[in-house]
Image (spheres, rainbow, N blue to C red):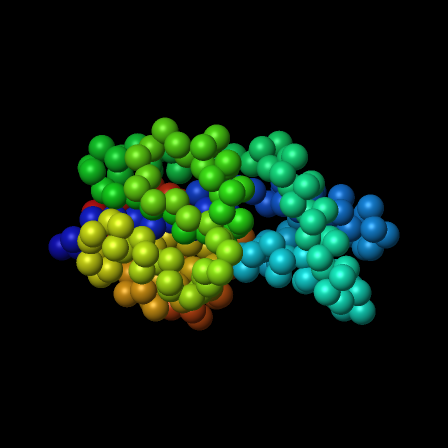
Length: 217
C-alpha cells in the first residue's frame, strides 16, 4: 500500500498548457528583431530550463552573443508579461484531480523554472482556488531544476518525508529533480515531452491522464 501524503507539480506542461502563449510571445520578439520564428511543437523542446535558456535556443547560432540574448530576454519579459493569459488553460482533468487530492487532504505544491513573479501571476489566475502550501518559480541566486535545492525547501515546508511525496512533471529535468530530492518521480504524458525522455531520466511511473495519479493513493 502506498503511503504518499503530498504531490509536488511542475507548472508548464503539467498543470497548465502554456505552450501557445510562450511560443506566440517568443515568435513576436523574434519577428520584431528580424530573426526566423519557430513552430509551436518546436517550442515544447525549447521550454523547461528557464527563460534565458529559451531565448538562447531560439536564436540563430551566430546571434547568441550576450547583448542579443539580453535584448531578446527583456523583450520576451515584456511580451509574455502582456499575453501569458491569452490562451493558457489547465489541462483537461487537472481541476478534477486537484479537487480529489484536496478532499483527501493530500498536500500540494508547485515547483517551476518559470520566473517566480510570472509563476505567481499565473498561479493566482488559474490555481489559487486550491490550497497549495508552496509555489515557487525561478528566483535570483537560487539554482533552477534539476538542482534539488528548491525541492528540499518544499520538503521542509510540507514537513513530510521525501519518499512520501510524489513529483509530477513532464520533462527529464523534472524526473531528475524528483530523484535527487528523494521524491517519487511520475511522468505526465500529456505535457511537452515524450515517454522516452521521461523513462531515460528515471520516471517510476508514467500516466496518460491526470486522474490516473489517484491510483497511487
